[in-house]
Image (cartoon, helix red, strand yellow):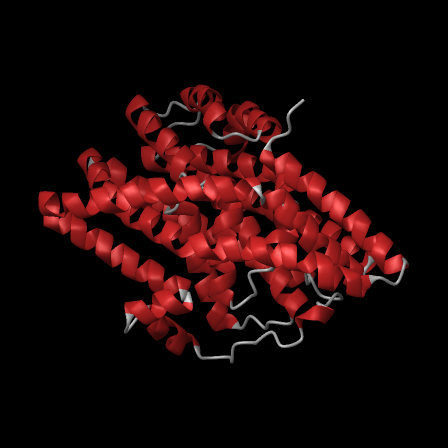
Length: 398
């Protein structure tokens, strides 16, 4: 039976952990650093090579295409607002549980001597730095938040230019298609890169790192549970649907999403649940397909938890000003980068960059995505249904 890529990455993580522990027991950690680590570094270089052009082209075309959403009037505006606010709250929950449980503390990357820790800056200074004074400098330095801000402005400018901007849109759209194909090829190499990085990490840190990663999975699922109850349950109460009524109607869709790990396949179950909740066909037919593509608040949540874990692991302090940058980066990566192959793994690099965390961390935790993917998909699907009842407005209890 052929394994999908997520399962391949999980197997690579398990095999890498086993190989690393064997090397540590044999006192051969230096061999992992010298001969195995360069393979992982090569893979990370490939990821870094494509991440900026991929995210920028996807974001610009995505913003430009929002002009089509305006044709739906208030439903379109309410939907985008609901997606943004709910995803932003999800990132706050992710950061909150990660800080409360101290994920990543107790282990350190011994080979990371020389990792540059960005100096702490004020919240106001951080917000000012979000707007790039020189976009070429932002692109060359990999300043993800500044790149995102410029991409949003460029997309808005293209919308205002109407048909005159169509040739520019076509250029970005073609670039997105080409770089997506390159990304798909690079992702096929992910199991090899993950195996190399996890092997070296375990050879250096041993069983402590393994236990820490197991704890990371538990914390992510605690975040998923809180997000579901607080954000989606809260939406049910605000909309007048009722907490119990919402979960009674949506349980089947949530279970299917959890077990299948695919948002698109869950759409029929979501529609059935929203019919029980008496959501209008107009809202349902617009919100659910759009949400399946661009409302990934479960993804945004686990990316925030991963970022705090890796920041603690590499000794990078995330102060309140960087929390803002991480929240924005995670929200944009979850909403504005739909269609990226293995998007959760690729866009994690964008969030790490916003926090000043080394990109090496992407491969270290990538194998865990197969395990948390169930909870992430269920949260993404639940978020779409919660957004639908909010957009539909107050109603009688179903």
